[in-house]
Image 1 (cartoon, rainbow, N blue to C red):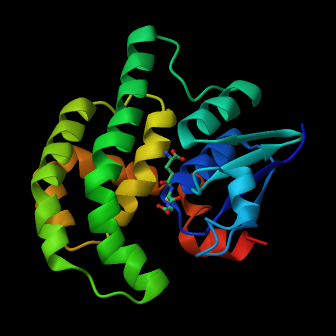
Image 2: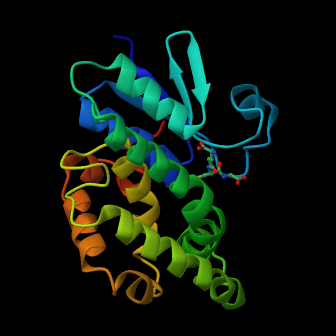
Image 3: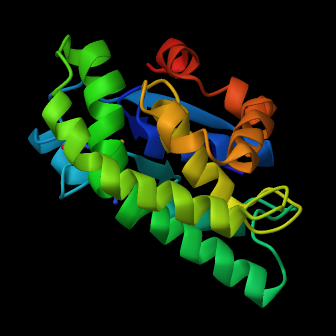
Length: 217
Ligand SMILES: N[C@@H](CCC(=O)N[C@@H](CS)C(=O)NCC(=O)O)C(=O)O
């Protein structure tokens, strides 16, 4: 199988989900560094016309949108599946992946994790406390719903890790660095235990910001 190439700025949580899937599958990959501030440059727009990351290259095939990339990897790298066979569990996985994109990332992680972690680390920005405060009601609603969906299961789509866990974990791992984490996750010990289970996976350890920065070339 040809090598997978992931174009990303190191630190991207969406790209980390892709890298975790490749690690979980034991697939060969390389990280191709995209420089911060060059997402609207013609060279990157040729890969991703909307100027975002990550982008996957696999032989002569190129794909953007993290969910599409995750499902592609899951389909082409066999054996082993990161999608549950049961249709209801697979439906739950798909639902959670959309909760990640539409409700956790948009309006919660892209505000709180950006203000607390990414902006200060990448750009030396001071956190905008007003923006964080405005995002908190939505953040509380998202955490309540994630805890409800997880219930007492080991992983979000049942007893085996799935694409839903891999997409959610990188966003929540950034959120965990924010002081707001205690308020948001504190009432949900099952969610905290799931975080610990995910953080202990070799795929998480292999894809930290520092590890991705070190392997990007
Ligand atoms: N829907 C896209 C979202 C990807 C995304 O928003 N990535 C962030 C980095 S984690 C990005 O490219 N941000 C650049 C920007 O907003 O200009 C996907 O699933 O791949």
